[in-house]
Image (cartoon, rainbow, N blue to C red; front, side, top):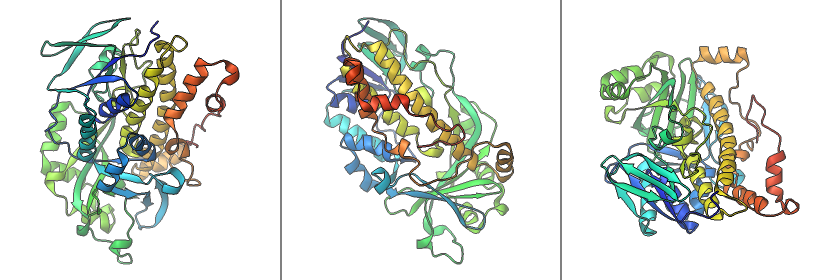
Length: 445
Protein backbone atom coordinates (compact mmCIF):
# COMPACT_ATOMS: atom_id res chain seq x y z
CA UNK A 1 0.00 0.00 0.00
CA UNK A 2 1.44 3.36 -1.05
CA UNK A 3 0.90 5.85 1.78
CA UNK A 4 3.36 8.65 1.06
CA UNK A 5 3.15 11.44 -1.53
CA UNK A 6 5.25 11.06 -4.67
CA UNK A 7 8.45 13.09 -4.91
CA UNK A 8 9.01 12.70 -8.65
CA UNK A 9 6.34 12.63 -11.34
CA UNK A 10 7.07 11.98 -15.02
CA UNK A 11 4.63 13.43 -17.55
CA UNK A 12 4.38 12.04 -21.07
CA UNK A 13 3.09 14.79 -23.34
CA UNK A 14 3.65 18.55 -23.40
CA UNK A 15 0.19 19.42 -24.71
CA UNK A 16 -2.37 21.47 -22.83
CA UNK A 17 -3.13 18.87 -20.15
CA UNK A 18 0.51 17.87 -19.62
CA UNK A 19 1.74 21.44 -19.22
CA UNK A 20 -1.16 22.30 -16.91
CA UNK A 21 -0.38 19.25 -14.78
CA UNK A 22 3.27 20.28 -14.49
CA UNK A 23 2.37 23.82 -13.38
CA UNK A 24 -0.25 22.47 -10.95
CA UNK A 25 2.21 19.96 -9.43
CA UNK A 26 4.78 22.71 -8.93
CA UNK A 27 2.11 24.75 -7.13
CA UNK A 28 1.62 21.76 -4.81
CA UNK A 29 5.36 21.33 -4.18
CA UNK A 30 5.86 18.16 -6.24
CA UNK A 31 8.79 17.89 -8.66
CA UNK A 32 8.10 16.72 -12.19
CA UNK A 33 9.69 16.28 -15.58
CA UNK A 34 7.95 16.41 -18.96
CA UNK A 35 8.81 14.22 -21.96
CA UNK A 36 7.57 15.28 -25.40
CA UNK A 37 8.17 14.04 -28.95
CA UNK A 38 7.48 17.26 -30.87
CA UNK A 39 9.92 20.14 -30.67
CA UNK A 40 8.41 23.40 -29.33
CA UNK A 41 9.33 25.16 -32.57
CA UNK A 42 6.63 23.18 -34.40
CA UNK A 43 3.66 25.51 -34.86
CA UNK A 44 0.15 24.43 -33.86
CA UNK A 45 -2.82 25.67 -35.87
CA UNK A 46 -6.41 26.41 -34.94
CA UNK A 47 -8.17 27.93 -31.97
CA UNK A 48 -10.18 26.56 -29.08
CA UNK A 49 -12.99 27.64 -26.78
CA UNK A 50 -12.30 28.02 -23.07
CA UNK A 51 -15.33 28.14 -20.80
CA UNK A 52 -15.47 29.45 -17.20
CA UNK A 53 -14.50 26.13 -15.57
CA UNK A 54 -11.26 26.05 -17.60
CA UNK A 55 -10.60 29.75 -17.08
CA UNK A 56 -11.02 29.32 -13.30
CA UNK A 57 -8.23 26.74 -13.32
CA UNK A 58 -5.99 28.96 -15.46
CA UNK A 59 -6.78 31.94 -13.24
CA UNK A 60 -5.75 30.02 -10.12
CA UNK A 61 -2.48 29.16 -11.85
CA UNK A 62 -1.87 32.83 -12.65
CA UNK A 63 -2.41 32.57 -16.41
CA UNK A 64 -5.82 34.08 -17.08
CA UNK A 65 -4.71 37.73 -16.95
CA UNK A 66 -2.12 36.99 -19.63
CA UNK A 67 -4.52 35.06 -21.83
CA UNK A 68 -7.80 36.94 -21.97
CA UNK A 69 -6.37 40.04 -23.73
CA UNK A 70 -5.02 37.74 -26.47
CA UNK A 71 -8.33 36.20 -27.52
CA UNK A 72 -11.98 36.93 -28.29
CA UNK A 73 -14.14 37.30 -25.17
CA UNK A 74 -17.88 36.64 -25.46
CA UNK A 75 -20.79 34.99 -23.67
CA UNK A 76 -23.31 33.31 -25.98
CA UNK A 77 -23.63 31.53 -29.27
CA UNK A 78 -26.90 32.33 -31.06
CA UNK A 79 -28.87 29.51 -32.67
CA UNK A 80 -30.61 30.75 -35.83
CA UNK A 81 -32.87 29.03 -38.34
CA UNK A 82 -32.78 29.32 -42.14
CA UNK A 83 -34.82 32.54 -41.98
CA UNK A 84 -32.18 34.05 -39.66
CA UNK A 85 -34.53 34.13 -36.69
CA UNK A 86 -32.82 33.50 -33.35
CA UNK A 87 -34.41 30.38 -31.85
CA UNK A 88 -32.15 29.85 -28.83
CA UNK A 89 -28.94 30.91 -27.12
CA UNK A 90 -26.28 28.72 -25.58
CA UNK A 91 -24.10 30.21 -22.87
CA UNK A 92 -20.43 29.32 -23.29
CA UNK A 93 -19.66 31.83 -20.55
CA UNK A 94 -21.31 34.59 -18.54
CA UNK A 95 -19.43 37.01 -16.31
CA UNK A 96 -22.24 37.55 -13.80
CA UNK A 97 -23.57 33.99 -13.66
CA UNK A 98 -20.33 32.04 -13.98
CA UNK A 99 -17.54 34.47 -13.15
CA UNK A 100 -16.00 34.65 -16.61
CA UNK A 101 -16.89 35.27 -20.20
CA UNK A 102 -15.89 32.53 -22.61
CA UNK A 103 -12.57 32.96 -24.38
CA UNK A 104 -11.76 31.82 -27.89
CA UNK A 105 -8.01 31.85 -28.33
CA UNK A 106 -5.48 30.45 -30.77
CA UNK A 107 -4.11 27.13 -29.54
CA UNK A 108 -0.58 28.36 -30.21
CA UNK A 109 -1.13 31.36 -27.91
CA UNK A 110 -2.31 29.10 -25.09
CA UNK A 111 0.57 26.67 -25.59
CA UNK A 112 3.08 29.51 -25.62
CA UNK A 113 1.80 30.92 -22.33
CA UNK A 114 1.82 27.48 -20.69
CA UNK A 115 5.34 26.78 -21.96
CA UNK A 116 6.54 30.17 -20.74
CA UNK A 117 5.17 29.42 -17.29
CA UNK A 118 6.83 25.99 -17.24
CA UNK A 119 10.10 27.68 -18.19
CA UNK A 120 9.65 30.39 -15.54
CA UNK A 121 9.12 27.69 -12.91
CA UNK A 122 12.24 25.85 -14.15
CA UNK A 123 10.32 22.63 -14.76
CA UNK A 124 12.53 20.41 -16.96
CA UNK A 125 11.18 19.38 -20.38
CA UNK A 126 12.88 16.75 -22.55
CA UNK A 127 11.95 17.18 -26.22
CA UNK A 128 12.45 14.78 -29.11
CA UNK A 129 11.72 11.55 -27.19
CA UNK A 130 8.88 9.13 -27.86
CA UNK A 131 7.50 6.98 -25.05
CA UNK A 132 7.70 3.25 -25.79
CA UNK A 133 6.63 1.08 -22.84
CA UNK A 134 6.72 0.40 -19.12
CA UNK A 135 9.72 -1.68 -18.04
CA UNK A 136 8.69 -2.33 -14.45
CA UNK A 137 6.33 -1.02 -11.83
CA UNK A 138 6.22 -1.75 -8.10
CA UNK A 139 5.91 -0.13 -4.68
CA UNK A 140 9.11 1.80 -5.27
CA UNK A 141 8.07 3.45 -8.52
CA UNK A 142 7.97 2.95 -12.27
CA UNK A 143 10.71 2.43 -14.86
CA UNK A 144 9.96 3.17 -18.52
CA UNK A 145 11.66 3.29 -21.91
CA UNK A 146 11.65 5.45 -25.01
CA UNK A 147 11.87 4.32 -28.61
CA UNK A 148 15.50 5.48 -28.87
CA UNK A 149 16.48 3.01 -26.15
CA UNK A 150 16.89 5.50 -23.32
CA UNK A 151 15.27 4.82 -19.98
CA UNK A 152 13.92 6.84 -17.08
CA UNK A 153 12.20 6.35 -13.74
CA UNK A 154 9.79 8.19 -11.46
CA UNK A 155 7.52 7.64 -8.49
CA UNK A 156 4.52 8.08 -10.79
CA UNK A 157 4.17 8.35 -14.57
CA UNK A 158 1.23 10.28 -16.02
CA UNK A 159 0.17 9.86 -19.64
CA UNK A 160 -1.16 13.14 -20.99
CA UNK A 161 -0.39 12.03 -24.53
CA UNK A 162 -3.72 12.55 -26.23
CA UNK A 163 -6.43 10.48 -27.84
CA UNK A 164 -3.97 8.08 -29.46
CA UNK A 165 -2.13 7.63 -26.16
CA UNK A 166 0.70 5.13 -26.00
CA UNK A 167 0.66 5.17 -22.21
CA UNK A 168 -2.99 4.03 -22.27
CA UNK A 169 -1.85 0.69 -23.73
CA UNK A 170 -0.36 -0.15 -20.33
CA UNK A 171 -3.76 0.37 -18.69
CA UNK A 172 -6.31 -0.68 -21.33
CA UNK A 173 -4.37 -2.45 -24.10
CA UNK A 174 -7.46 -3.40 -26.11
CA UNK A 175 -9.03 0.06 -26.17
CA UNK A 176 -8.74 2.18 -29.29
CA UNK A 177 -10.49 5.46 -30.14
CA UNK A 178 -13.89 4.98 -31.77
CA UNK A 179 -14.90 7.03 -34.81
CA UNK A 180 -18.26 8.80 -34.49
CA UNK A 181 -19.00 8.77 -38.22
CA UNK A 182 -18.77 12.56 -38.47
CA UNK A 183 -15.99 14.86 -39.62
CA UNK A 184 -15.93 18.62 -39.13
CA UNK A 185 -14.74 20.75 -42.05
CA UNK A 186 -13.62 24.25 -41.15
CA UNK A 187 -11.83 27.27 -42.54
CA UNK A 188 -10.69 30.67 -41.29
CA UNK A 189 -12.01 33.64 -43.23
CA UNK A 190 -12.27 37.39 -42.88
CA UNK A 191 -15.50 38.62 -41.31
CA UNK A 192 -15.74 41.52 -43.77
CA UNK A 193 -16.23 39.06 -46.65
CA UNK A 194 -19.58 37.92 -45.25
CA UNK A 195 -22.87 39.12 -46.71
CA UNK A 196 -25.41 39.83 -43.99
CA UNK A 197 -29.21 39.79 -44.15
CA UNK A 198 -30.49 43.03 -45.67
CA UNK A 199 -32.28 44.08 -42.49
CA UNK A 200 -29.25 43.59 -40.20
CA UNK A 201 -26.07 45.69 -40.04
CA UNK A 202 -22.83 43.77 -39.88
CA UNK A 203 -21.99 45.20 -36.45
CA UNK A 204 -25.39 44.06 -35.09
CA UNK A 205 -25.15 40.48 -36.37
CA UNK A 206 -24.43 38.22 -33.38
CA UNK A 207 -21.24 36.18 -33.33
CA UNK A 208 -20.60 33.35 -32.61
CA UNK A 209 -23.62 31.92 -34.40
CA UNK A 210 -24.87 28.46 -35.35
CA UNK A 211 -27.25 28.51 -38.30
CA UNK A 212 -29.49 25.44 -38.40
CA UNK A 213 -31.10 24.31 -41.62
CA UNK A 214 -31.71 21.45 -43.97
CA UNK A 215 -28.00 20.55 -44.09
CA UNK A 216 -27.43 20.68 -40.35
CA UNK A 217 -25.63 23.49 -38.55
CA UNK A 218 -23.09 25.96 -39.93
CA UNK A 219 -21.05 27.60 -37.19
CA UNK A 220 -19.15 30.90 -37.37
CA UNK A 221 -17.03 32.03 -34.44
CA UNK A 222 -14.58 34.95 -34.19
CA UNK A 223 -11.18 33.81 -33.01
CA UNK A 224 -8.83 36.77 -32.80
CA UNK A 225 -8.83 39.76 -30.47
CA UNK A 226 -10.92 42.12 -32.61
CA UNK A 227 -13.13 39.39 -34.10
CA UNK A 228 -12.05 40.12 -37.66
CA UNK A 229 -11.09 36.49 -38.38
CA UNK A 230 -13.87 33.94 -38.16
CA UNK A 231 -13.77 30.17 -37.95
CA UNK A 232 -16.49 28.82 -40.24
CA UNK A 233 -17.46 25.19 -40.41
CA UNK A 234 -19.96 22.40 -40.53
CA UNK A 235 -19.95 18.63 -40.07
CA UNK A 236 -20.48 15.85 -42.56
CA UNK A 237 -21.07 12.12 -42.32
CA UNK A 238 -17.97 10.47 -43.77
CA UNK A 239 -16.56 6.92 -43.69
CA UNK A 240 -13.65 6.30 -41.36
CA UNK A 241 -10.18 6.56 -42.84
CA UNK A 242 -6.76 5.47 -41.71
CA UNK A 243 -4.13 8.14 -41.11
CA UNK A 244 -3.14 8.17 -44.78
CA UNK A 245 -6.78 8.51 -45.81
CA UNK A 246 -7.41 11.50 -43.56
CA UNK A 247 -4.19 13.11 -44.79
CA UNK A 248 -5.31 12.54 -48.40
CA UNK A 249 -8.71 14.14 -47.72
CA UNK A 250 -7.03 17.20 -46.23
CA UNK A 251 -4.43 17.42 -49.01
CA UNK A 252 -7.08 17.46 -51.78
CA UNK A 253 -8.07 21.08 -51.20
CA UNK A 254 -10.38 21.40 -54.19
CA UNK A 255 -12.13 18.12 -53.35
CA UNK A 256 -12.45 19.14 -49.71
CA UNK A 257 -13.91 22.48 -50.72
CA UNK A 258 -16.45 20.69 -52.90
CA UNK A 259 -17.45 18.53 -49.93
CA UNK A 260 -17.64 21.65 -47.74
CA UNK A 261 -19.96 23.34 -50.25
CA UNK A 262 -22.39 20.43 -50.63
CA UNK A 263 -25.96 21.68 -50.22
CA UNK A 264 -24.82 25.23 -51.03
CA UNK A 265 -28.18 26.24 -52.45
CA UNK A 266 -29.98 25.27 -49.22
CA UNK A 267 -28.01 27.67 -47.01
CA UNK A 268 -29.04 31.29 -46.33
CA UNK A 269 -27.09 34.17 -47.88
CA UNK A 270 -24.57 34.64 -45.07
CA UNK A 271 -23.47 30.99 -45.21
CA UNK A 272 -23.23 31.06 -49.00
CA UNK A 273 -21.03 34.14 -48.75
CA UNK A 274 -18.75 32.25 -46.35
CA UNK A 275 -18.55 29.31 -48.75
CA UNK A 276 -17.77 31.72 -51.58
CA UNK A 277 -14.78 33.15 -49.72
CA UNK A 278 -12.97 30.10 -48.32
CA UNK A 279 -9.17 30.55 -48.30
CA UNK A 280 -8.06 27.09 -49.44
CA UNK A 281 -4.92 27.15 -47.30
CA UNK A 282 -7.03 27.45 -44.12
CA UNK A 283 -9.23 24.42 -44.78
CA UNK A 284 -9.01 21.85 -41.99
CA UNK A 285 -10.75 18.65 -40.91
CA UNK A 286 -11.52 17.25 -37.49
CA UNK A 287 -12.73 13.64 -37.47
CA UNK A 288 -14.77 13.13 -34.29
CA UNK A 289 -13.27 10.29 -32.27
CA UNK A 290 -14.12 9.30 -28.73
CA UNK A 291 -12.38 7.03 -26.24
CA UNK A 292 -14.72 4.29 -24.98
CA UNK A 293 -15.46 4.54 -21.28
CA UNK A 294 -12.59 2.97 -19.34
CA UNK A 295 -12.90 0.92 -16.19
CA UNK A 296 -9.70 2.42 -14.83
CA UNK A 297 -7.40 5.32 -15.57
CA UNK A 298 -4.43 3.70 -13.88
CA UNK A 299 -2.52 0.42 -13.59
CA UNK A 300 -3.12 -2.01 -10.69
CA UNK A 301 -0.04 -0.70 -8.86
CA UNK A 302 -1.29 2.88 -9.32
CA UNK A 303 2.10 4.02 -10.57
CA UNK A 304 0.89 4.77 -14.12
CA UNK A 305 -2.05 7.15 -14.66
CA UNK A 306 -3.72 8.69 -17.71
CA UNK A 307 -5.81 11.84 -17.97
CA UNK A 308 -7.25 14.27 -20.50
CA UNK A 309 -7.92 12.96 -24.01
CA UNK A 310 -5.94 9.82 -23.22
CA UNK A 311 -8.69 8.88 -20.73
CA UNK A 312 -11.83 10.45 -22.21
CA UNK A 313 -11.64 12.25 -25.55
CA UNK A 314 -14.80 14.34 -26.00
CA UNK A 315 -16.14 15.83 -29.27
CA UNK A 316 -15.70 19.62 -29.32
CA UNK A 317 -19.36 20.65 -29.57
CA UNK A 318 -19.69 21.83 -25.96
CA UNK A 319 -16.16 23.27 -25.88
CA UNK A 320 -15.18 20.96 -23.02
CA UNK A 321 -12.38 18.78 -24.41
CA UNK A 322 -9.47 20.90 -23.22
CA UNK A 323 -11.47 22.16 -20.23
CA UNK A 324 -11.92 18.68 -18.79
CA UNK A 325 -8.23 17.94 -19.35
CA UNK A 326 -7.40 21.04 -17.30
CA UNK A 327 -9.71 19.83 -14.55
CA UNK A 328 -8.13 16.36 -14.55
CA UNK A 329 -4.65 17.82 -14.20
CA UNK A 330 -5.61 20.38 -11.56
CA UNK A 331 -7.44 17.90 -9.34
CA UNK A 332 -4.83 15.14 -9.61
CA UNK A 333 -2.15 17.63 -8.58
CA UNK A 334 -4.27 18.65 -5.57
CA UNK A 335 -4.67 15.02 -4.52
CA UNK A 336 -1.14 13.61 -4.81
CA UNK A 337 0.60 15.60 -2.04
CA UNK A 338 -2.14 14.56 0.39
CA UNK A 339 -1.51 10.81 0.24
CA UNK A 340 -1.17 9.41 3.77
CA UNK A 341 -1.70 6.18 5.68
CA UNK A 342 -5.33 7.26 6.17
CA UNK A 343 -5.67 8.03 2.47
CA UNK A 344 -3.37 5.68 0.54
CA UNK A 345 -2.76 6.16 -3.17
CA UNK A 346 -4.96 3.29 -4.37
CA UNK A 347 -8.01 4.56 -2.48
CA UNK A 348 -7.41 8.19 -3.43
CA UNK A 349 -6.98 7.48 -7.15
CA UNK A 350 -10.06 5.29 -7.26
CA UNK A 351 -12.21 8.04 -5.78
CA UNK A 352 -10.56 10.69 -7.98
CA UNK A 353 -11.31 8.68 -11.10
CA UNK A 354 -14.91 8.10 -10.01
CA UNK A 355 -15.42 11.81 -9.29
CA UNK A 356 -13.95 12.78 -12.65
CA UNK A 357 -15.85 10.07 -14.57
CA UNK A 358 -19.17 11.18 -13.09
CA UNK A 359 -18.50 14.68 -14.36
CA UNK A 360 -17.25 13.48 -17.75
CA UNK A 361 -20.44 11.42 -18.16
CA UNK A 362 -22.56 14.56 -17.70
CA UNK A 363 -20.40 16.49 -20.17
CA UNK A 364 -20.75 13.71 -22.75
CA UNK A 365 -24.54 13.75 -22.27
CA UNK A 366 -24.54 17.52 -22.81
CA UNK A 367 -22.33 17.11 -25.90
CA UNK A 368 -24.73 14.55 -27.35
CA UNK A 369 -27.66 16.94 -26.90
CA UNK A 370 -25.75 19.69 -28.72
CA UNK A 371 -24.58 17.30 -31.45
CA UNK A 372 -28.18 16.24 -32.06
CA UNK A 373 -29.17 19.89 -32.47
CA UNK A 374 -26.59 20.20 -35.28
CA UNK A 375 -27.80 17.28 -37.37
CA UNK A 376 -29.48 17.77 -40.76
CA UNK A 377 -33.17 18.65 -40.53
CA UNK A 378 -34.46 15.22 -41.54
CA UNK A 379 -32.38 13.53 -38.83
CA UNK A 380 -33.44 16.08 -36.21
CA UNK A 381 -37.08 15.36 -37.04
CA UNK A 382 -36.48 11.62 -36.58
CA UNK A 383 -34.86 12.28 -33.21
CA UNK A 384 -37.76 14.48 -32.14
CA UNK A 385 -40.21 11.72 -33.05
CA UNK A 386 -38.20 9.16 -31.05
CA UNK A 387 -37.87 11.41 -28.02
CA UNK A 388 -34.05 11.53 -28.22
CA UNK A 389 -32.52 14.43 -26.25
CA UNK A 390 -31.79 17.62 -28.20
CA UNK A 391 -30.47 20.77 -26.53
CA UNK A 392 -32.90 23.53 -25.61
CA UNK A 393 -31.95 26.27 -23.19
CA UNK A 394 -33.70 26.77 -19.89
CA UNK A 395 -33.23 29.52 -17.31
CA UNK A 396 -29.73 30.52 -18.44
CA UNK A 397 -28.27 29.37 -15.14
CA UNK A 398 -28.65 25.70 -15.95
CA UNK A 399 -24.95 25.25 -16.74
CA UNK A 400 -23.86 26.25 -13.23
CA UNK A 401 -23.07 22.58 -12.49
CA UNK A 402 -20.45 22.77 -15.25
CA UNK A 403 -19.12 26.30 -15.12
CA UNK A 404 -19.26 27.12 -11.39
CA UNK A 405 -17.79 23.90 -10.05
CA UNK A 406 -14.79 24.40 -7.76
CA UNK A 407 -13.12 21.09 -8.58
CA UNK A 408 -10.12 21.63 -6.30
CA UNK A 409 -12.39 22.42 -3.36
CA UNK A 410 -14.29 19.18 -4.00
CA UNK A 411 -11.07 17.16 -3.92
CA UNK A 412 -9.91 18.83 -0.72
CA UNK A 413 -13.32 18.20 0.86
CA UNK A 414 -12.92 14.51 0.00
CA UNK A 415 -9.43 14.43 1.52
CA UNK A 416 -10.69 16.06 4.70
CA UNK A 417 -13.59 13.62 4.91
CA UNK A 418 -11.28 10.60 4.58
CA UNK A 419 -8.64 11.77 7.02
CA UNK A 420 -10.97 12.82 9.82
CA UNK A 421 -13.76 11.11 11.70
CA UNK A 422 -17.22 10.87 10.08
CA UNK A 423 -18.58 13.43 12.54
CA UNK A 424 -16.38 16.08 10.95
CA UNK A 425 -17.13 15.04 7.38
CA UNK A 426 -17.35 18.25 5.31
CA UNK A 427 -20.79 19.38 4.23
CA UNK A 428 -19.59 19.78 0.63
CA UNK A 429 -18.55 16.15 0.42
CA UNK A 430 -21.75 14.86 2.01
CA UNK A 431 -23.85 16.94 -0.36
CA UNK A 432 -21.97 15.62 -3.37
CA UNK A 433 -22.81 12.07 -2.30
CA UNK A 434 -26.54 12.62 -1.73
CA UNK A 435 -27.33 15.03 -4.57
CA UNK A 436 -30.01 13.75 -6.97
CA UNK A 437 -28.90 12.30 -10.29
CA UNK A 438 -29.44 14.24 -13.50
CA UNK A 439 -32.54 13.77 -15.58
CA UNK A 440 -31.52 11.19 -18.22
CA UNK A 441 -33.10 13.24 -21.01
CA UNK A 442 -31.63 16.63 -20.10
CA UNK A 443 -28.50 17.63 -18.27
CA UNK A 444 -29.54 19.64 -15.24
CA UNK A 445 -27.60 22.02 -12.98
